[in-house]
Length: 140
Image 1 (spheres, rainbow, N blue to C red):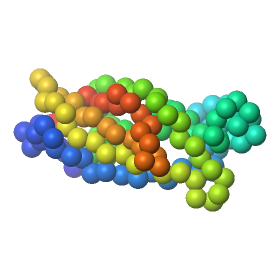
Image 2: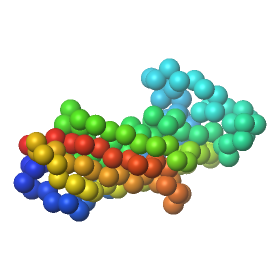
Image 3: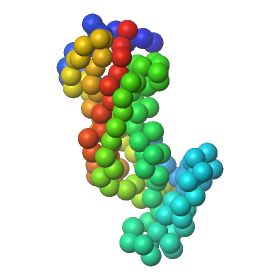
Image 4: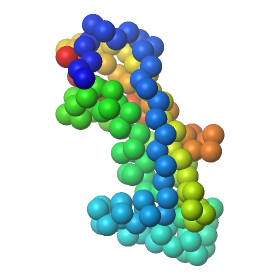
């Protein structure tokens, strides 16, 4: 699917998605990224340093969020800029269920050169986890 610049308007909503996160997800991400910080897998350590539980990697959360945009546009290379602020961790309990990252997004601005600004909202448990989350996407 290719999204055309002329097909979107400011306010166009992208299909929202939910991304489950379990402890197993975090172990796989740690292996892929090389980030074995114990706050992402050792509950005792995470609590000792003041966290509520083991937390998802920030870059994992950021990567899951941008999937809403790349799935919508159909081409990950169409994302020319992407940035977030990490505002709150995503606790991942060891309860067989884990956590869910909910992501919605909408076109906030139409820019020159067939580009649009997409603002994203990522939450878990009703709490916003990424701030200033936006992507610049070049459309067809």
